[in-house]
Length: 470
Image (cartoon, rainbow, N blue to C red; front, side, top):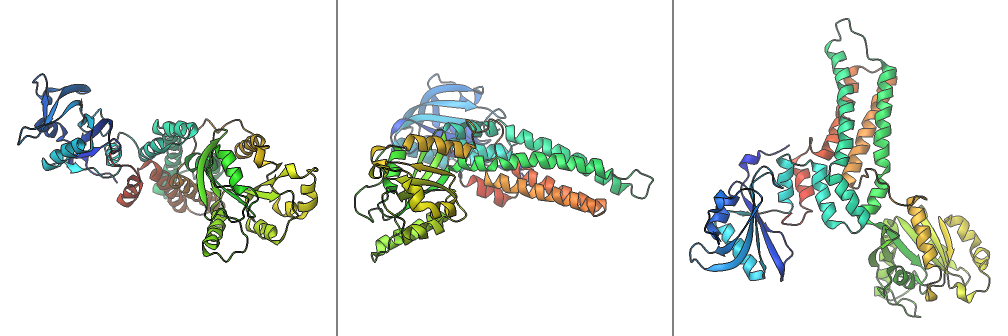
């Protein structure tokens, strides 16, 4: 559902971070962008701003039209519709990035009739005016918030329309199938060949394969977009904070020989071998009467619940006890990397298998490694093996289209479920009306990704996560 762009008012916003800096940018978009700018801008050459061509930069001063007070020397960029970010007339005022200067210019624009832009409203207008689809609009925020090179590459792919192109092919196939069923329904009383169910099912299976390939990229997409949520767990003083510091290459967590030092979950993000990890350094699980430490333990349990991967540390110099066994029970259903620390205190590394054999069987770890975190021994090997685990032996993330948005993934799964119902109804001999309904559901689900089928509530939810000025 798209608004009529002709009814939109003119908006303005600060597009640069607040505070002193080299430059501040105020963006104006809408039918009155040029007339508003003309009222507060005096060109150094004396030319009228309204006569400026698109993609030109003018030098001059911003003045208060009532008092004729000069507020700043600026560069003013004119971009004319429809070849702009929003497909509307756009003016950008490049001024000095002083808090007072920017505030005064914004106050002038608002007093002359502009409205403060809502979060993401410039990009929302680009979508509503048809310059980009909704998947491309969402990729703008992914581009802004990208924390690594892979996230940047994937966001640019989506902004360039590569995901949209894949989805367009799916939609075209669905429309062709829907047309077959509609023809059969419309001419049911005439002599007409029925749908070839074998060929029809073959086309559905081909679509299911394409959707399945996109859905399968969702795991990679989640890691790229959010980082792999990884909880570091183990008994108190087993080396969890030391491991975090080694992985981060900085002293993020306090390390002491005293149990209970970490009393809260410490969250840190780092790229390891090109993969973004979000590490959760948890408190130990020892019994304690200290209410602060007990709260830390409760939060540690929550961290385990939301983690995608567990790094479980055991002290190789000690036999496992009930606390170790309780921690292992908390990891059930999770992918676990087992780390035997303090190998420098043990002459025989096989002691891990001897002492922890039963627990190893219960855990079925994805990786098992011996370390001495005191001297960073084993860290390099751990990083390489973590990369191999996440990428499943590949050298890097896929170069093809990757689904990174949870909203997109849910819609693709809905489309797949609808197509699976089509096949089931074919086998049950159901009429074309039922097939048509299922195909329309699949088409609507895919359309929600790119915005052909969308409500104002969904748009508000998507664009409210954007920064103001974008």
